[in-house]
Length: 640
Image (tube, rainbow, N blue to C red; front, side, top):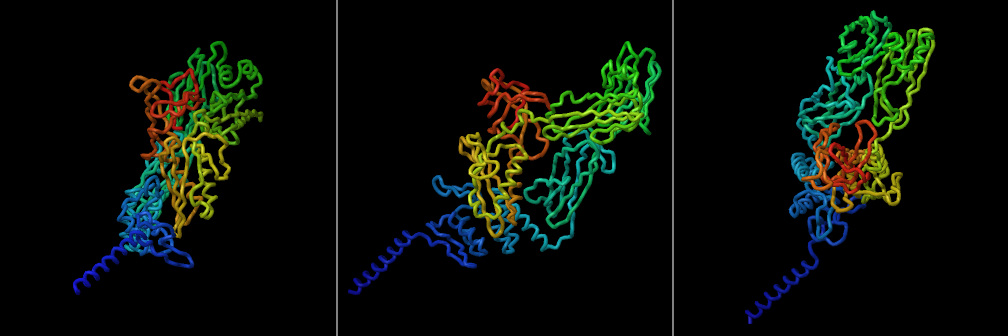
């Protein structure tokens, strides 16, 4: 009897245990507890909690926002135990993804906020190794700053090393004929270099480093420029260096004061960079180092005069006077800028100056700047010469060959040359240059991006500031065709506008800052081309708009190249390309991607161009714009 009762008790307990297990298997794991703070709830926000890594990660983010850091760490550890790596587009199940999964990064952020700096640094470094992000870089800098503050290190300043941007003239003074001028160098500091500014332009940096190389391009006009390079470390230590740069792309100014047939010629040379060589009909002529004057003999019967002057940077000016049947003085007037008939008249009325433009040969210019070379001649001495109010004359004379270098705005540019003779007579000449965009650089050929509304943007303060700065930067660079869909902005594309990819994004705003993540999706394959992000602890939306735009432009520069082979091994209609060196910024990602579409064009450098084909991927073009022409050896390519 007792044995039977014993078995009944055991059977009852077993039934209860089975029922408990069945009940637990039906309800699943308990969700993260909901915690209250200032009438707001944090933790699990409702729905079916399955105890998966993404559930715990969502709880952790909510706890962090509410300041419940120990609870956040527990959830992050649970998530890491199930899925340890930080990554974009983490698959949850089937075709469902979590766009941004960063448990190690968020662990580092929480540890930083709790003052556990060493552990925080380790977690953030793991995150950056697995999936770099702007937020991780920011908090790693903050962690390192906090660690150094605890150690009370001696003050330090970054060391700045500058690569000479041109020919050195001593004491930080350089001369260059390049356009643009590249300013390159290195900044180093054991306290981590956190910022570099060159000529007022911030150097792009992703996180502070102990050593940072920089290379920035500056489009500087003719003349002397002072460029300041400043650097700052994480502890606020700053350094500053200045270089003085003479940009000279012009040949020497030649002034002829007197010519005596069969006897001699007298005049002056001037050049900001200094005269390297001066010849008359191939004969070297000495030039005074004091005032630039020269005096050369003319041989009897020498009817042709060719003057060549070269400065220390290699810029050259040539002046020719040639007339076998007339006096050299008449020939000088003729070839210095006025017709032969006018020259003869000028000999009678010696106070009528003449101006002739030698360069450029066309008023249509396809570059950002151009040399402007002209001659001024008069029977009486020219006392003043200026262009747009800027004086060019160094020494009075009767025949002057002048060269200058002017930067151009898009569209019509006007330059007025004024000359005044000894008796007060003046001549004014207007030069009109029209700067045009080469065909292959027109916006209509650029890569099209259809921009869609970002997730959660309606919850973000000042979101319009982000949109404005992002679109403005895209418009200024003219690198992409940005077509805004359902964003209600000035850049909304026309119906039916073509595009190659779509831009989607997400915004994450918390008490510790705002993160914006943008994903570029290929239209045909639906594959992710790139993911770029920006972060601001102060939720500066305008800054993040500019920052995100800069990342896209750095990722996909307008790389160029030349076709070196066609057909044969590469297949019918296919070609091989040798890409040009990317000079403006020396970064690994600034290389054209193999599957990025190229455009093929023809034309001389600095002149008009003709587009031959577009949408060329891996040597094959899907769109031919000129049926009678196919891409050939020597044709140029540029990224769309």
